[in-house]
Amino acid sequence: MEIFIDTANIDEIRQVNDWGILDGVTTNPSLVAKEKDKGKDFKTIVKEICEIVQGDVSAEVVAVKYEDILHEARILAKVHKNVVVKIPLLPDGLKAVKTLAKEGIRVNVTLCFSANQALLAAKAGAYIISPFVGRLDDIGQDGVELVEEIRQIYDNYDFKTKILFASVRHADHVKQAALIGADVATCPFKVIEQLYKHPLTDAGLKQFLDDWAKLGQQIK
Ligand code: G3P
Image (cartoon, rainbow, N blue to C red; front, side, top):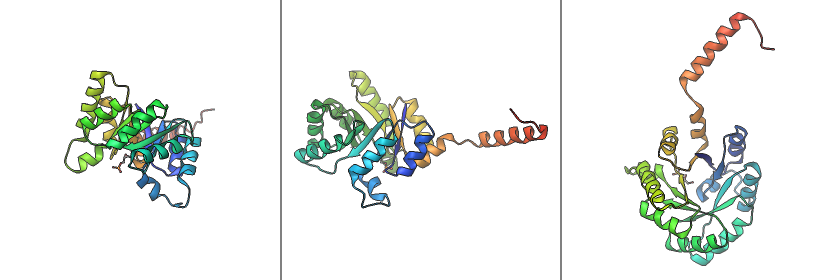
C-alpha cells in the first residue's frame, strides 16, 4: 500500500520524504489555507512539492461548474507531470473527469462518502477515488466499511481506479486500510509519526543500549 502525506506544509513533506517511506502527497483548499505563507501562489506550492517528492501530488480545483473545472484542471496539470488534479464528486465534476481522462489528465475524485459515488467515479474514468473515512466515523457511520464496499465493487468489475483511504485520524486506520486492500492511505504528519511508535520498541532499545554500555566496547 502506498503512503501519502495529507498536507500542504513543505517542512512536513520534506521531513517525511527524508524518512524514505513517502509515495505521494494530497492537498486540499483547507490544508493550503492553513499554511503560514498565504501570499504564495498555489501553483508555486504545488511545483515545490513535486520537486521534493517522487510520486503523485494531488492539487484540487475550486471551481464547481464543468467548463471552469476543466480550465483549472488543465492549468494545474501543466505544473508538473506528477500532478493529479483533485475534483469534487459532483455531476459537473464527474463530467469533467471523463473529458480530462481522454486528454490523459489523471483525476483524484474527492469528497466521496458512498459506494455509489465511488462506482460513478470509476465509470467516469477517475484515476483515484478518495473516500473520507474519518469524517464518516465522526458522524457515527462506518468509514472503513465504505472502503471495503468500494474494494469489492471495483474488484467485481475490474475497475483500475485506485482507492485512496482519506481523512485518516489515527494509526489504526492505516492498518485497517492495508488489511482491506486500499491502494493508498493519505495521512497527516502526526499519524505517520505514530506508525513508527511502539512502547516496547523504545523500552527494548533502552535495555540493549544500557546492557551494551556495561561492556565498554565499540563496534569498529
Ligand atoms: O485531503 C482529504 C482528507 O484526507 C481530509 O481529511 O482530516 O480534513 O477529514 P480531514
